[in-house]
Length: 137
Image (cartoon, rainbow, N blue to C red; front, side, top):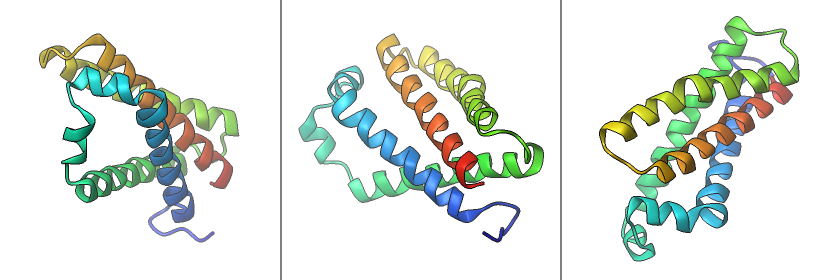
């Protein structure tokens, strides 16, 4: 596929959608109830949220993360193998995302269980996006 701004946009959108789906599964049937308990929300409170803004904003952030990963691969890691691209994406989560949320959670005094729930998601999110970018990029 032709690239615009140095990235494969099909891969960007597909990887963002894949990460978004991972989130739906992770925060739904796998960790949904534990996450709700860790953040102190009930199902009723969650349903009162502006779901369009929440899901739309989350997908926009997924697109931004996916584009950034695609741009990184296009700029610095064009000829890497599938597994190295997946491990690079994992490294982004492990080295940048987890320390950032961990620091925020320490200062806001969030629970360790919430950190591990969210950290697990971000690791899976980036692994999934890395796999899609490696397959399509």
